[in-house]
Length: 216
Image (tube, rainbow, N blue to C red; front, side):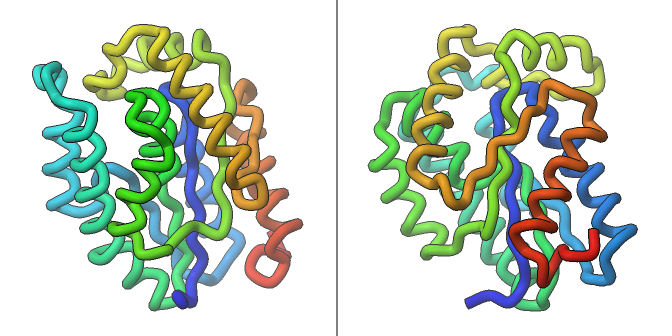
């Protein structure tokens, strides 16, 4: 098994994952001596970033749901073997913006492929590698969309153009995923200042994993 520590951030569009991940990285770098790696899905490395471009291109409205799921899975596999696993083997802390839970919620539930089907598809890609802990940033859909369109620097991708009903279904999907993995997934109230969200995550890390994060 890998030696490092693997944590992921999940949430609906506009939940603030990217900002929180950056702040979390900065806070941990200040307080720990362990080397940290911040990455994202889809993406994180050159091949996976190119797949990301295909998935999220706003002109690709005809993309089939299973095609979408397979592209995410392919991107995840390459990202895992090229970046995440080597970092963990080197005893680093990896913070990843999205991982397999996103596929379960978006493609499994949101696209109605089925959570079990998408989980089985991803098992081939991840080979049982899962994060020690996942933080689900919980925010009302309305707040998330306000953030998306208020942030002029944020990319507007194909998923942002989906109807509100789709994103509501994704949130329902996340609830189903959380119920499947209650020991791993921690729900964090993200409808508060980003500093408070980050501190809440740091508190959970310190409490649950005192060997790695006891001095936060």
